[in-house]
Length: 335
Length: 235
Image (tube, rainbow over all chains, first blue to last red):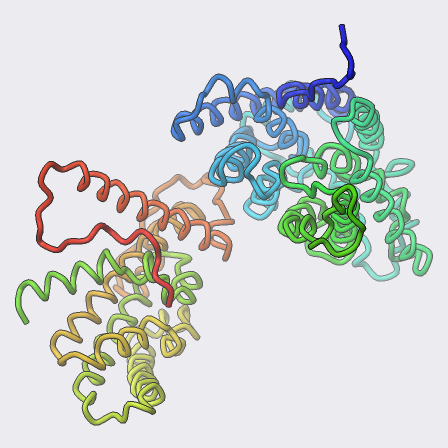
């Protein structure tokens, strides 16, 4: 029952986080369908670690434990970490990544609402710097049954050739180093699907669906995803038109790696991202530009995580420079 | 030098104005070389040696150095002493010298050396100046040792690896088993900043706890002791 003046109460943190979790479900379902149920084990592991770490940190900081654990923000961080990591990393790597996200990137900076860096991406960066070999082992779709996956997650012996087909971004980067290799020739080989990575295209499409849910429920605004995806398409498209043998086409960049997960779920983190409308556009575009540069010229195959952290540092400046004029005042320089 | 003076110098150098934790001086070698404990302690010992010698030399010469050009003169004295230490390392610990490389000559630019010369040795007699340098240097050495030990333990699961470069016949400890995957981040430059940040946080926490306890004490002793400095001094 609504009364005039028809102002709806803003949803609390718990409601927003619950919507984000729901919007992730299609992506998780397709992920599990394409790559096996191992990801569900990782998600469970990450969730338990996150809740335990959140409760422990809140207790140490003398805050109300139950209230803050109940806001589900730790769970969202945990799921994003688990979905960013390769699905077959050993259990301790998932636990360590979530601990870094919750303890170091979130609570050492002052907890929810205070962290300048995206916790999930900070954890991802720490892991890819600390364990580059484990972090580059991605399975091909339907390659291992659940038992074999569970064995790997529990720390069983890792036969690298049997489990890892490099991600498409990785394969492209190493493949292009051999003289005479072209993007088109490489994209005929095994890890590549029709558009992006084989199997990952479907996961990406499901993330897109979840992203539309978030947009429809107004949990996120259109600015960041649109600026991010358009800029990525634009810069990769220009490079591809100039030199199609050396640069991947824009639709490949949009469909591979963590592009769609990042566009709707990661860069839209309300705490560590820009808050003004124009600032959000700059923030999203900046991430896309840096991510494309790292993917095309950098030392790591996937650059979105580093790009997010880099743009997180710029957020105070962006927000300061893009304050909208106060209603009734002229635009331009604010006093 | 009275016992009281000595205690004050020791307390200042080792804790209250610790170069690594409170003054945040000498961070370049502190962060760059503390990838393992042997490197860190070796460089720390070399720094103590340079600090003690330069404080002694400057304290002896302080009445003959024109005030206006004192800094270049200090630097010349320090550079000469660093060269001596550099050559000595090359002669006696050659393999360690190769590992530490540029960081031994770089002690010249370590601001803690110049800071103690300028702030203390230029105004005080030789004996107390030398004690001050040794205490300050030991404070830095302690931080270097803890930092190096923590980073080495996290990155490779060993302690004192490479000790045979200093003591032939000794060998490092394998703390974690062979299958320890190694947290590579700790050995990289960001790991140094993260670990030092944690150490400074612990230092400030201890100081705050001490200050709080002193406030709660019924009758504070009036011996002029101050609450621990929690804000780092700027250089």
